Image (cartoon, rainbow, N blue to C red; front, side):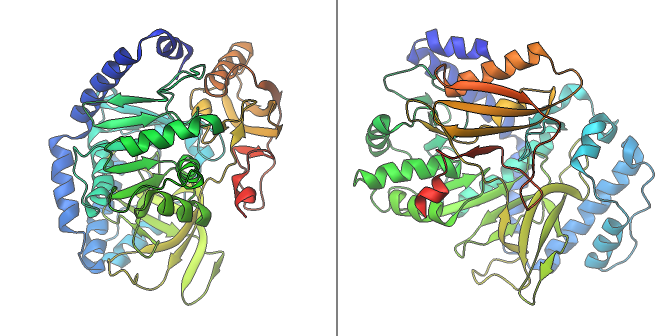
Length: 467
C-alpha cells in the first residue's frame, strides 16, 4: 500500500471504506470467477479421485503442449529440443524435462520479458510481483486463464470442506485495511459483496486482542483464512482468554504463504475447533499443494509438476530442493524453476486414500515477527519489498523492540528517492515510533540451508517462545 492509499484510509469514514472494499470485492469476483474458472473447477473436481496413471497422462499432454508453444513464441526457449515422442506418460515427461536446464531466479530476473510469450497481448495480462524468501523483487505477467485456474485449485480445496463460493469468511492477511495510527476498534473492514471480513494484522497488540476475540465470536464466518503467523496469534488470544470457538462453528481454517509449524497447527486447531488445511503455492503459478487429514501435502498434478533434486533419501522419502513446472496456459512458461524451497516427497501412497504425489513438508519461508514499541507483533513483511524495484535483496534485523535495522543489497538505480519510498512503506506497516536504520551491504549472510530469513528478531521469535 502506498502513502496516498494510507492517507485515504486515515481520513475516510469506516462506512465509506467498507463501501469501497465491497466495490473492490464485486470487481474481484467478476474478474476471478469467470466461465473458464467454473469449467476448470468442474474438470478438477472430476479428476480429484482419478488414479495417478491418469494424472500422469494429463501432465504429459499439458507439458508437451506448453513446450511446443514455448519453442514457437518464447524468445529464451526457441532453442529447446523437440518434445519426447515416447508413449509412456512418465517416460515422455522425464525425457522432455531432462532436456530443459533448470531456471534460476537470478537468471529469470535478468530478462523477464525474454520469457514472455510474444503471442500474448500485454493489455490482457495481469502483472504480479513477489519478494520471495530472499526479498528479491521479481516481476511476472499472467494470463487471465492461468489466474482463474490457480483459483480453481484453491476452490477445489475449499469445496472438500463443504464451503461454497458465497459462504462468509474471516481473513487475516497482509493487506493494510486499517491505518496503523488507528487507536480504537473496529480493527477490521468488510467486503460485503464477497461476504468477507478483513482483520488488520498490524493492530494485534495484547491490549487489542480481546476486541478481536469478541468480534470473532460475534461474526458469522463459515471459514477462516490467513498466514500461519497471524492465525497463531489469534489462536493464542482465543485460548488465553478461555474462549475457543465452539466445535462445528467453522468448516475449516486455511493457511498459506508461510511455513506451517507444528505448534502453529496445534494451537490453531484447538482454538478454532476446526481442521486446519494448509496450502503451498507460488506467485509464479507453477505449483500448488494442499494438505489432507494426514497433514501431508498433495500436489495438484493437473496444475504443475514438482521435482526434487535429491540431497538425502531412503525407501520412504526423498528430500531436496524443488524444481517446479507450471502447466496452466500462462504468459510465461516456468520450466524446472528453482523456487528456492526444500521439500520431502513421499515414495508411498498417502494413508488418507487420495491419489497422487505427496510431500511430508516443504521448508519455505520461516520468519520471525517484528515487535513494535507498543507491543504489536507484525509478521509477513515482504509486502514492503514488493514495492521496491531498485532493491535486489533485503533483510530486517531486530535486537530490541524500539528499533529495526534493514539490510539492503541495492540495484543500480537505488538512491535517496528509493530509500524514502522504502522507509515510508515500513512506516505504513510498523508506525512512526519505531527506529529505522537502513544499511546498504554487498550481500546478506545465508542460513545453513542456503537461504536467509527476511526477518530475524530476538524479541519477536514466537517459535522459541512456544518451545
